[in-house]
Image (cartoon, rainbow, N blue to C red; front, side, top):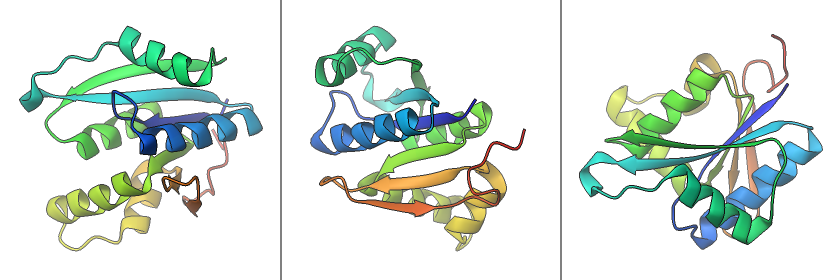
Length: 150
């Protein structure tokens, strides 16, 4: 089954709501499972629980089928997201446009001047869809175009 992963902030920001709405639409369209991911930063000392995350999403979007709520801890949001996406072998990753620019900066720190699209194709093998606050999208296809070839 296809897996869509969407990282969000807590409490849900306007950008997170737009990104989550698009991820829900994509998951429904593809009859996919959806993982809603939040990263608790070690340095912030704040502890968002899976229950907190689930309640916030359901308050905004109602009860959703085929959804898994995941909260991970990390020092860098972007690195933790990449780890989760790779570990889960996600087919589609839906991120906010603001998150995408942070991802690029993080990857530049980890690798000298990386080609972001090639990195995502080679390491994640997932389609990455960015969503702006108004719901506009841009898609970056993986090497297999986000198809389920497993």
